[in-house]
Amino acid sequence: MIFTLTMNPSLDRYLYVDKLIEDDAVRVKKYEEYAAGKGIDVSRVIKEIGGTSIAISPLGGENGEKISFMLDKEKVLYAAIRVKSETRMNIIVQTPKKQYRMSLPGQSLLDAEFSLIMDMIDATIRKGDTLVASGSLPEGFSSSVYDGIVKSAKSKGIKVYVDADGENLKAAVKEGPNGIKPNVYELSRLLGRKLETDEIPNALREINKLYGIEEILVTLGKKGAIVFSQGKLYKIDPVDVKVMSTVGAGDSFLAGFVYKREESLIEALKLAAACSTATVMTPGTTLCLRETVEMLKDKVNIEEI
Image 1 (cartoon, rainbow, N blue to C red):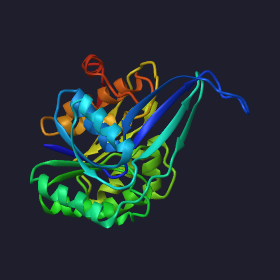
Image 2 (image 1 turned 120 degrees about the vertical axis):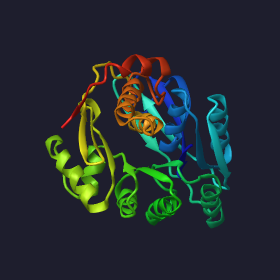
Image 3 (image 1 turned 60 degrees about the vertical axis):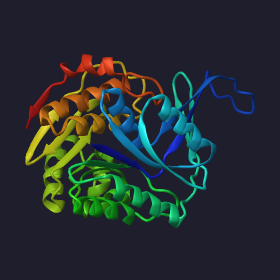
Image 4 (image 1 turned 180 degrees about the horizontal axis):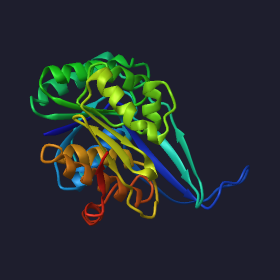
């Protein structure tokens, strides 16, 4: 079974306008809301492509109730820890040419609420399961939460993949998760230096040597992806499609990968790339569609380098 953990979920509200005008009324043509958070996105994609996972996340207030309703509607299984504080919201203003993203601050969790999340993980996830821990942490929480999660999971024989940034990723890698999924900018921050595309293969070997991480999935946007897995390197070429939005593309890549990983590495990489590509073909924070993923899988080219 695959479990995802989203410690700092959000409700994303998209406002579609023709243009922003200073000191004048701006008419919103339509608005849409999405359940958001990197782990939640992974679970939503796994459901869309025909799999099953359980999304673990703290949810509170009106925004938390909306997220629960949305996950129910999509038939995504989830284990919500009800918390006192309101789940945060992101507001995205979309014009025909530009996007403006405003992230409202989230509230911290009570110690008892955090303990409930850890108890949920301990009670439900078993040896041989996979845990995807993704995204930021609630206000006031130390990055040590990530290394604690990885250490606890590995001690129970749980496979753990991490998709985080900055200090959270630096904390997680110290405990040697089975895999990580940074983009090139997150990878650069992990190593403390700017990386060009041709430097990535050696950087992945370096991370493997430093931390013993067996699988490193680096998404490169329109340049595709480079993956290190069990001592080998693979380059995934991009599929040429019309890009509507890149939001959730990295989460979709990780979802496709962990869903098929136990069956075949190459099939996992093909599905990962197809899910990611299908997601950029949809607007806003809409994720991939199953029929598009199926259509794209055979178009994915993978080369060992």
